[in-house]
Length: 331
Ligand code: ADP
Image (cartoon, rainbow, N blue to C red):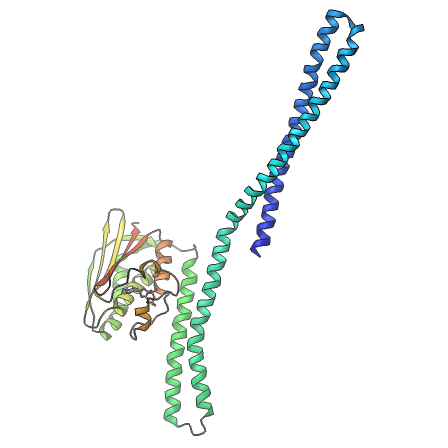
């Protein structure tokens, strides 16, 4: 598809270049040909004035032939010039067409990968449910307890599907440029995020220390709450039970700075460049029973930070912990 689009675009660019080149050549030919004619006429007039009109015939013919010769040389030169423009223009047009199409090709490739990853993630819980149901239906003497276990297990898979679809929906909504903005108190957002994080933190015996100073930003409160929840949720998921997490917010220079520090498993240097990619999960996280997820959290967090014209960075040491820092322009 892209090959034929590139060919069409190349032909289009080339047609424009050639139309310009041929148009200019015609104009140049007319101007130069007129100039040649008038400069050929001048010596004949002079000859007539000096020697009289009777002897002017020969020189006139001579000049006329010279003029024809000059004109045909001009035509040949312009033709050669246009052939050179055609060859050069074709390669330039091809390069331009490739450059125009490259970002579209990249984003299409990304969409394809995304759809593939999403279907793969959706298929895993669905296949688990299907297998369990099929096995249960084949068993002639299914007990009530077995049926209840099956329903519980299916409910768990449904929960996973629900959280995946919610993640995909949030990713889609935070990918669009359209966001309603209002003055948001980072202190309020942080305390709401802390409220939400309290239950999973208690479940993992993790204490959260908060050093929250007020700062206001222009943004979407729901998205900012989502951002802080993702960072806190990850800090809880990837920490050892009994450890400590710190959340700090403060105004600094022209930014509201939010940082979440954990003393958990940390992130290997090789994983750091990929953690904001959709569906990316470090191998250590995939194999960990506690850390459930689909690798969408940080992709959503990055989208939200970008929408708020901010920046997110991480400092991490494997085995020692990680600090995620977000900077958002102050309102
Ligand atoms: P998820 O947590 O659902 O796997 P995320 O997009 O939130 O997806 O994170 C991507 C990956 O980055 C995680 O799988 C994990 O490997 C790594 N990661 C994110 N936050 C932390 C953290 N605080 N400590 C260690 N690893 C982290």
